[in-house]
Length: 125
Image (cartoon, rainbow, N blue to C red; front, side, top):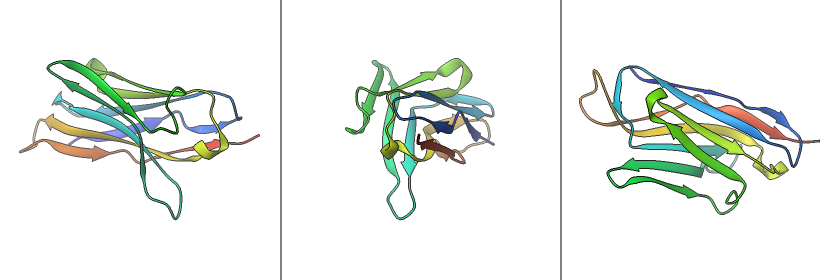
C-alpha cells in the first residue's frame, strides 16, 4: 500500500519562503508524475506545479500565478517531491496537496494515482 505524507506547511509572512515535502511510503518501482495542488473552500482544486519523469528526462509545468516564485523538484531515490515557495503572497494561502501519478508499486495491478492528506499554508503578517 502506498501512502503520501506531506510536511512543511505553516504560517509565513508575505515575501517569505516555505518548503513543502511529500514522501511516498511503500515498495515503489516508478512514479511518473509528482504534482502539487492547492484548494480553498468554495473553489476548485488548482494545479500549482507538476514534474514528470520520462525517458527524455524531467519536465516541469507551473501555474501562471506561481511562475518565477515556486520551484518543484523530486528525489526519485527517496520517492519525495518538494515545492520551494519563495516571495509568497497572501493569495498563496490554501491547503496544499501532493499527487503522485502513474505509481507502479508492489501489490498494485496497474499504475495508480495517490493523494496526500493536505498541509495548510497561510501567508499573513
